[in-house]
Amino acid sequence: MPSRANSSVYDRLGVPTIINAHTTATRLSGGIMRTEVADAMREATQWNVDMATLEARASELIAGHTGAEAGYVTAGAAAGLLLGTAACVTGLDPALMNRLPDTSGLKNEVVVPRSHRNFYDHAVRAAGVTLVEVGLSDRFAGAGVRDTEAWEIAAAITPNTAAVLYVAGPEARPPLAEVVAVAHAAGVPVLVDAAAQLPPAANLKRFIAEGADLVCYSGGKAIGGPQASGILCGRRDLVMAAALQHLDQDIHWEQWNPPASLFDKTRIPGLPHHGIGRPAKVGKEAVVGLLTALDLFVAEGDEVRLARWTAAMEALAVGMQGVRHASVTLVHDRRRPAIPTVHLALDEVAAGMTALDLIRRLQDGVPSVHANPSRVHEGLVLFSPVALRPGDESVIAERVRSVLG
Image: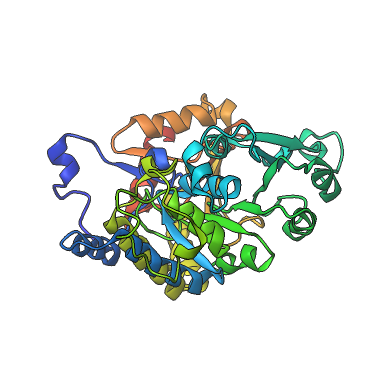
């Protein structure tokens, strides 16, 4: 891997690089791709392929890793949510595909537990549906122990329900299997947002095994693929519906001869127009990069990956030991045991600054270090290994010492 001191394309563009100790956040350009992935993408640019054929092959490979009937490479997990929702609304009817986002008279509601609402579900609403919130998250409000329950989801399902949205996570309630049971009893599919639920690698198969009809993953996070890539996997008919609303459809019906492994031409009367997912185009190099990264992610395995990340965080913790007005701890979060982090607990009074002040000083200095601010209200600054380059640990420790002394 090239040294940070060497000239890079960003130097030539006049754009300063940063050290990303936050996460593979999109606003921080994600993580660092392995050279094998970048090489595969470069090679992919030197040839032309039929995109339907490439995505059909990707479907077979993704299905092998996930246990799903079919898979598809999307322009990120959010694009997968848009395409998955559209597929649940239209099924395989190209006339309905042409109408989106106009869903008047169609199944245009998506039921979601209230505690699962987040900024990313805008991608679901972009398909033209309305989110129907269910339940009360007393446990998050501190008013009790309960959250949305499966019977409440069942009660909210009507003839207008296109899908149930479920945002996966270690603390997600109710259990996915219970949600699947009530949704399927009403003939409604379940769309799972599992964008950041890797590792462990077992989660590639977990949600499909629990009955989800569609699952979205980010390709640019722990998988290590292109930042603008993702996976949509699940039922073949729904993945096919998503693909029909994503691919370039500027072709004569008589000429269209897609691979039967993903597309069943006998199930549709004709091709839709360019669909609602067309603006979220995926290039051949992104498909190849994602597939390459997925193979490498699975091959590395959780134990080797954990050891690599742990070594980086141990080095960072040692480098910051003894820093003034703070204590430093290596943490294996019980909620995310596969990703170790370093927590810096700041004595804000003694330091004369808040944890957010420290975050900002690290960010605004040279080199710019971006830490995780999600717990600054507790006086904590978090550092993650997922997007670091070798040697970044010592630079981070030096920057922290330069701010705190």
